[in-house]
Length: 391
Image (tube, rainbow, N blue to C red; front, side, top):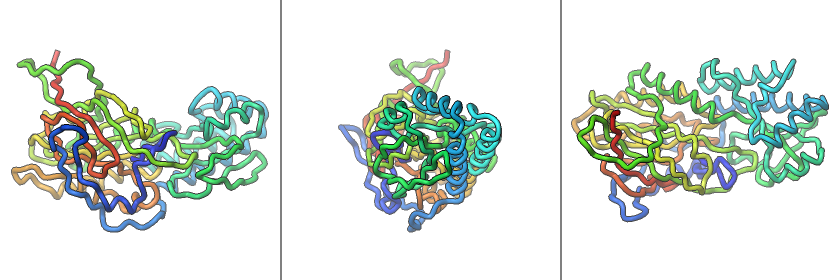
């Protein structure tokens, strides 16, 4: 994950090199040491800044879309409509608003992005357009002709290329927000993640790993341990991820967590949990969200790996990689941590440009109550037991 800086995607991904040095999990306040964490060691040393095939395909599609949109701004009527949309909406579904040859070009780019990310064609349009930074609103409103750039997938990129309606290219500093208004063409991460969670679950099951449907249940009442039929869960009452400086070209993060352990049948299971609210670093969220459904697990211990949806995420590949790694682990009659196996299963090239890994929590138990740092020290969660009663 990377939740981004003050403006968006935060960067829980403090450079790939730092992934090799994890801090031990620890308690924030007076909480039990339920998340005792051996330091994970993701598959040896990762190469530096070489984009994955998925990231390259997504970036290429976004760049073609950016060029096409820039050319289309020569149409005064369309230019005005797009300007109004960009000024009144945080994100604009540009393919749906386009027409003619532009719509065809953007639809083709949408198809390439979906295929690269392992998503079904029925996912629909994934391209969206947004103003690069709120500081650009005044110039755009005043009639300054905007440029168009594709969102960068590399956190370490020093420059960004933006295009004008005449086909000219402008090299911009990725760290310094330009005064000139820029439309950024990006992937609708919320939509991609929702579709990706379905694909991930389906592929895990197909490959032999138990998995429940993605969960995003909010609870607000006080838990009651009664004799009424139901099940115990672990609920997240608050969560925050670390803050770090990110390029202005980046958008908001989309976070999900893979909860893993041994199911009631003694076989490894992975339950994906969507966390759509967690999109900015340095912000405390209070979701009252169920993280673990303990009725699914044989032991009173489970692990959680927090990840981020971004351009390099191919959900079919992720499911196959995780299944291949986890199916070699058998129930030995006692709890076995699965975090390291999941991290080692992630393809090496995912760590080289914009890592998807955010943080991890080991040995989460049903009785845990308190605030805990993740093993990597990039985030913390406050959790408590919660009993879900049947009606």
